[in-house]
Length: 233
Image (cartoon, rainbow, N blue to C red; front, side, top):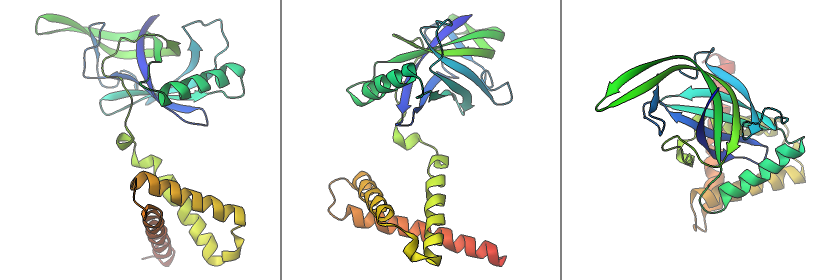
């Protein structure tokens, strides 16, 4: 088994996170690069265990889904918060990402299924064509280049669409029965409005109102679209 390193980029409160395994077109510190599909040749994705320091005798503290998107190979992390190890690593990663520059790195273990060599300039580079990923591990230092934190602007629209859909469904339900929203539910919506406003327009005293208006517009659009579908338009 061979190993390479990566950097955790995101970690949420529910134990789900994201890490970059590799930028496929770049040559890493090991003098290796990747052919597109090197990670996704098994039906588009692979699953593997999350362990510490490649120690396969320890109980995994979660699992990871390995997939490619464009020129980047990702590991979607799922920590098992029902275990003590999962909770401990979750706290450690949240602290690392939220405090100063992130320093915690990960490594993944794999077998090479198919590879070739190319001459690029004065260097002989190994091109990894197919990898069988066994595990993702917590380590100290990585081999990959440019595997830093993913910025929020790089998040996919797919992560935002379910929120809009849910808000649209809520709006449709309230339209039929406005009294069905409890005081707790109303307070939660107000908190969402305030937090979105603070993010979208930092320091703007009207940020909450603008965020509320934007959400109202999206909900109205969702309701209109649903109405047209029902009418066959």
